[in-house]
Image 1 (spheres, protein in one colour):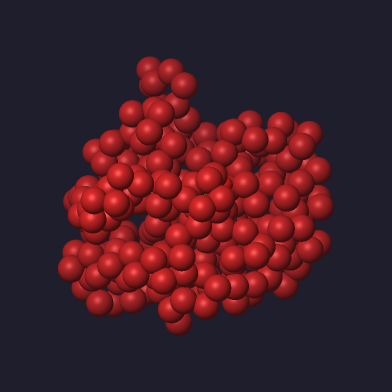
Image 2 (image 1 turned 135 degrees about the vertical axis):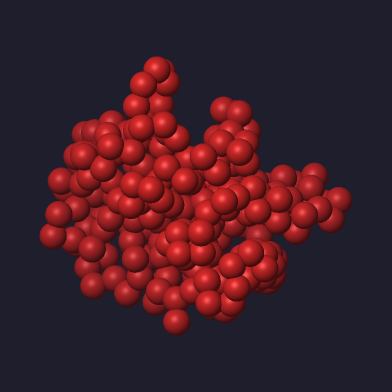
Length: 250
Ligand code: 13P
C-alpha cells in the first residue's frame, strides 16, 4: 500500500505575511489527514513556513535546489540553506523550470543527486506538451524524462523519490487530464521505473498527478489505482480547496 501524498506548489506566490495567513488558515482544516501533506513554498517563505507547521502534520518543501554545495552560482539555493531553513522536500524539474529557465534532463538529474545526497524527499516532475500528446509521443517523452532524471541513481535512492506526472497542457489551464488518461500515463511511468529498478521499487514509488487538480476533480483522480496523490498549483493557494483535496486523499 502506498500512502498518498498531496503537495501544494505555491510557485511564485505568497509573501511571508501571506504565507503566515495561509498556513494558519490551512493547518486546523487538515488535522488528522490520512495522507502526507507538503507545501512547497518560495525560498523566502521556507523558514517561516517550517516554524508555522511545527506541531502539525504538514511538511515544507522548496521548489528548486542547486546541484553544487556552495559557490559562484548566482540566483541558486543550496541544500544546506534549505535544510537549515527547515525544508524536507524539494520539487525538481517542474515544467515551468524546463520551459522558462532552461532546465534539462541533465540538470534535473544533477539536482536530484544533490537532493538525495542531502536527505531531501525529491518530487521529480515529468510530463508532455500538448503537441507531444497530440502526436502520440506522451510515453516517449515521459520515458526520456524519467530515464534522464534517474541516470546513475541507485535503487535504494530511487525508492525515496516521488514522481509527479504533470501534463504541461493541463497546468494552470483548467484543463485536467481525464482520470483514465492520468491513470494510464502514470501506469506507464511506473512500468519504466520497473524496467530501471524492478518491481519492488516501482510498486512502492508514489506517483502524483498534477495539472488543474482541484476540490471538484480530486475524488475521481484519487480513485484511480495508479494515482498516489497530487501536486497542486492554483488550488493550493486557497485553504478551503486545498483542505478538501487533502481530506479526500486517503
Ligand atoms: P495547477 O494546479 O495550477 O494547474 O498547477 C499544477 C502544477 O504545475 C503543480 O506543480
